[in-house]
Length: 209
Image 1 (tube, helix red, strand yellow):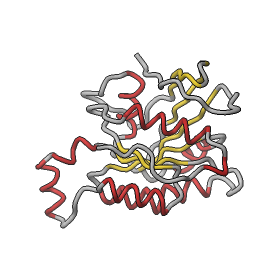
Image 2 (cartoon, rainbow, N blue to C red; image 1 turned 60 degrees about the vertical axis):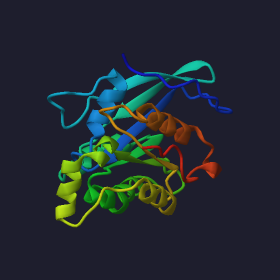
Image 3 (cartoon, rainbow, N blue to C red; image 1 turned 90 degrees about the horizontal axis):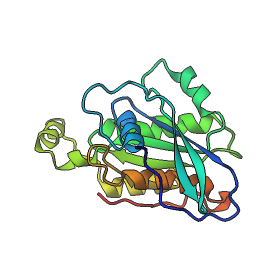
């Protein structure tokens, strides 16, 4: 069954739908993250390139609201399709794999710029920086593979610092496989969408690993 958030209390919030769009490189785990969150099950075999848009019910101020989740394809050639997804977004999840320094760099240099260019500075939706696949940080095979190219997994501290430097609402990291911090990731997205504009982009949220 799809998950629902803990009841959140937000002042003066009346909108019944929150649109959340996930962006990031291909293969960083965006789709698996969405499937795991909405079905409470990690996909063991085929993972589609793009997750079907899905809605879950969340409780805000003791009333049900809809969290509408939109996946996007991170590969080149899907720019126009992504642009259609960005319209009327309330919050973005900018995702990278902690086991892929390249995806981390692209999150900061490509994806944040793309969502900023999709809207005017006066009405840009907030974004949360999300590190995925944290269960692999202790996987020796993956660590050794990175070491061969003189690289290391992205640390929590690097994610926190990048979130502050690039104006994110906050940083959170999770595992779609173990579901560690998975629910907290989407709670962070909800809070980012509902926080009054002057208070947004405050820095660090839940960063446990």
